Length: 252
Image (cartoon, rainbow, N blue to C red; front, side, top):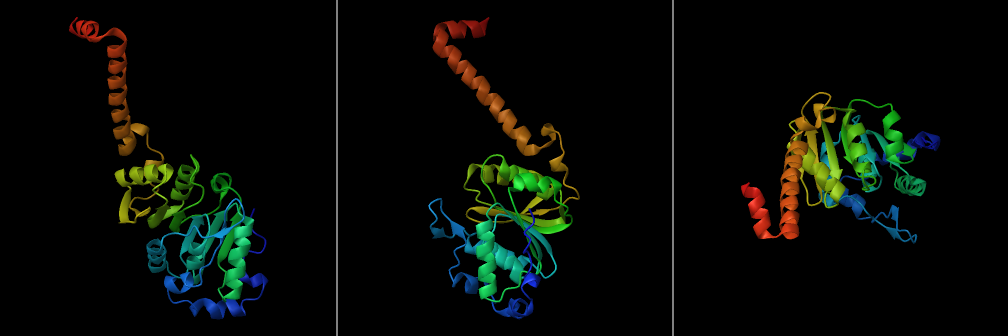
């Protein structure tokens, strides 16, 4: 659902508007050590993007840009401070409240930030957004959620828009990065230790609707799997029948 207390307008905008210049860098935000996340036991922690990715977003974002992220955290503060028209999709209402409290305490306006609470895989298909300029895929890393986020956000990203994929150290993020790196519709802008930023270089990216044989990564990996399958079949036959019988069958 869309958070009914989305904007700072519900609380008055004077403090938030004045506070937009309070932070001049990502380092100043991080110096406050915001802890927006919670473990399953309720312990306060931060699972923020790496500092370099946050700085990349800070440098890339501009006032008025249409942006979106799945997941929330310090990145949400960065988008808010940069004056973006920003949409946040997270299932964690408590996280939203902590971000709101931090923003109110430090004079950060959330006037242009829309929080939508719920699973991204359920919300994105019907989300009425277009011409997005920056997207951060950093919600659930479970299969197949990262791919669902990519698909529905990718269809709403404008040509020249940037998509940042986080946690490429996790299998789902790794595969997504490998796929995007192989497709001509995406240009790798910057690779980080566990993240990657891509720019869309084609209108309405065809890779979202191509047949699997037209997707370079898919075709290459499928050929590899076919070769592996044949080798495994041969190895199984060799173990089952013995070397002499197996070779005799090959020579027939």
